[in-house]
Length: 171
Image 1: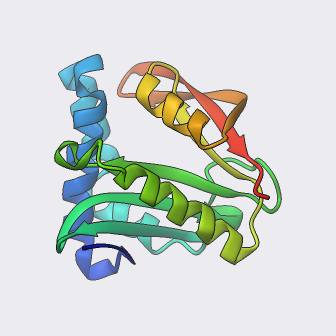
Image 2: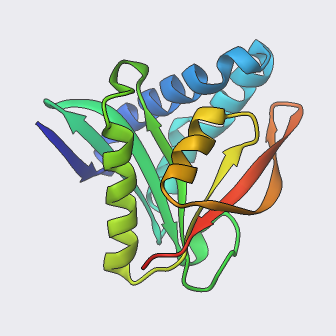
């Protein structure tokens, strides 16, 4: 059974664990161990994630498969967005699955959830950032109707990297 539920503050340790595991699994092989560790320690620690979890307009969601946390997403609206793309936009800041749950259609379930959440909140367009070298993610977003409109620099440790900014207008 699969379900998506909003993350609560008392689940912060689970959020830290999946954030660190999925980020490192996705980007670890393409970055130095030092840069990866610096990023994980600064971005996915208790205080940082609790602050993000409690930020108005920001929400985290766990995807459960048979009671186990399989993935998560972070959605931002209004001033919680990392950039101002559009007054009425919603940002998908993070969408990650554990490796053992990939290639089972679960990423699409999380994307559908995010797009439906935007519709429920009356938000349009939906946007996100993706690393320029993450071909799997870029292909997934293209299949979901996202198109590139800009880019920005994402710094991992001491390594400035390029993220493409993509958006989708909802029907």
